[in-house]
Image (cartoon, rainbow, N blue to C red; front, side):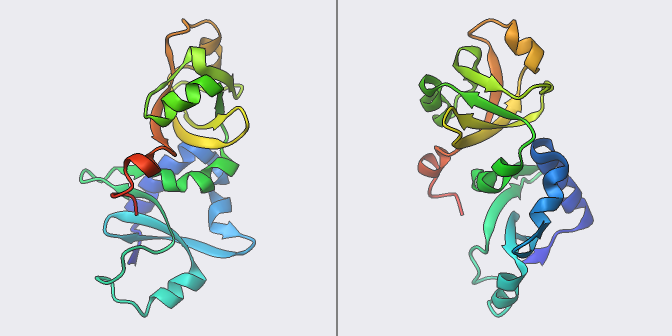
Length: 180
């Protein structure tokens, strides 16, 4: 368990800024204490400093997980967000997409969101912008990347993809043996 290097921090913050923008500062400086990011086995964990001090007594090879896994670094040093970060990203999301009840199951099985399943979209969403996907009942379901801008979504074919799937809460069931 070690702090992130400057390069790792930059790559991770750039990825998270696609979804929450300048609200990134709110994740680190919280009113209930100071939180930090730590790297362990190529995975980035979000943990309070109180718990981090307690975990200092455990050797690194015996430590499996600490805090919430936000994502991992791939072999090519790219950062991939995990679905476990959704609870922390959703309240601060700048761009949101709400999908109809009929399209929820399709999204939760790992498919992209089609125009026919789109309920609402945040105004001024740019193409290839990171978005958090919600159900119509405001329950966060996952996140993805907008395939079309808000203006393009209005005049596109109903079978066109409007949000590329990246992660959803169905992964808890589909990939439970690999999520930590």
